[in-house]
Amino acid sequence: MPKLVRLYIRQCLIGFSLSGLFVAALLSANVANLWHLISTSNLGIVACMMLFVFNGIVFSGVQFGIAVMRMAEDDDSSGGRRRPEPVLVRAHAHGHALVPVPVRDERRMHR
Image (cartoon, rainbow, N blue to C red; front, side, top):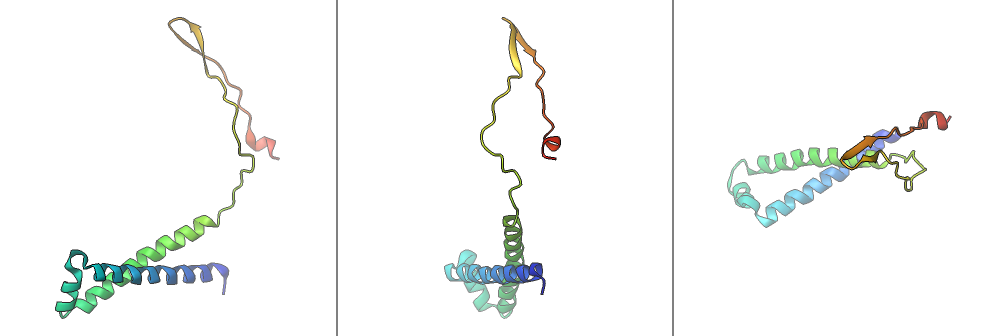
């Protein structure tokens, strides 16, 4: 099985596990009187399953997105502080004059 498919399945399982915990917490805390609504209705189990599945879809998508974004490699190894370049100088007492700033083409330097 390809690594990406394994990653996706693992993140879906984590997302649906989180959804189960979330729905259990919602019902145990009786948020918006959900426990009473689900326990007294004849379609309460359907509502509970819908809550679990829809939250599972959302949590799985977020979990997979986080996992994919964490796989990124930092291409820029230079880092550090940059020396500030002046762009405005006093021309006279009432204002500023623009000063041309030389710009290096970073793409040509890395070739």
